[in-house]
Image 1: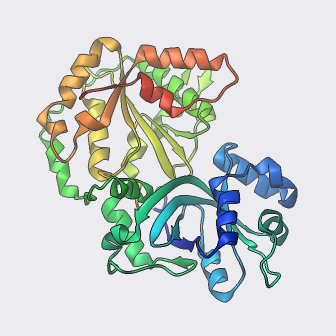
Image 2: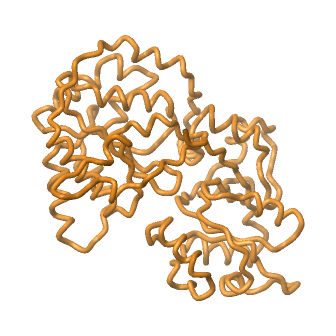
Length: 376
C-alpha cells in the first residue's frame, strides 16, 4: 500500500514595500513560462517543470538565504501548500511543484537587494488561486487566536496542519468556502451511515459503451493538460486500439487531505496533488451505482469544490436526476442534487470528436457548459 503523504503549509509574507509588490506582480500574478528562463536550469529540472505542469506557466517566489529561511525552504516538498500573506489577509494559496537554489535565476527575476543578496531559495507553484481572506477566518480552524498573524517565511506546526486537513479536506477548497462566507463542515465518518441503507442491486454494464466513454474522458483530460487516473483494474482496457495505461498516470499520490477512495472513481483529472474533476460513467440497471461512489467521496470530502459528473445516455437523464433528488442523496449532509452534474454520452462524444481534429487545448469550463444540473 502506498504511503499516505503528509502535506505541510507555509506562510509567506508578500508585503513590505514597492520592491516586494513589484516582485509579486512580476513572478506570481504574472506567471512565467519555463521556456523563458530554461537557460538558467539543469536539463533534469527543465523536464520536471514541463512534466509537472504539462507546459503551464508557474507562479514563482524565493527567499534570501538566512538560517530560518534555509531551514524552512529545505523542509518544503512537492505538493506542500503555500499561503501568501499581506496586511492581515491571505492573498494567494498554491501548491509547491519544485524548488531549486539558483542565484543566477533569482537575479534574472528579481536582481539583488540593498545588501547585494538575492532571493535564491526559489520555489515554483501551481494550482495558485488568488484570495482576499482575513487571516482571522482561518485562525479558528488552525487553533490560533483571532489576532494571530504569521511573521515572514514560516511553517505552520505539523500537528495543526494534520488536524486541519484530516478534519476538513484540501486547503484551497477550504479557503474558497471561507471566502464565500460558509462555515467548514467537519468530516465525520459516521455520515457514511447515510448511504448504508441503500439496497444493493445487481449491476449490469454495457462494457463497450462504458469503455468508450472512459477513453474519451481520458483523451479530453490529456487535452486539458491534466494528469488522468483510472482504477487499477481499468488500465489494461483499450478502445479503438488505445490501451488506457499508455495515457494515464501509473500511481496516485495519496495525501492526508485526499481520500484513497477517489482511486475507485471511473475517471479522475488532477494536476499535481490537486483534484480537478471526477467522473462516474453510469450504466447500472439501478442507475445509482456511480452516484453511490460519488456519495461516498462526498462524505469523505464535504468541503471540496471540484466538479463531480455523472456521464450517462441522454435517455437516462431523468432517472439520474430522480435518484439525485432522493433523500438518501439530497439530504443536508451530501446535497448531491446540487453538487453532481449530468453529462450525456452525446455531449462527451461531440466534444472529443471536435477537439481531436484541432490543435487546441481543452478547458474544463467547456464541460461545465454542456453539463446539466439536477436542481435549477
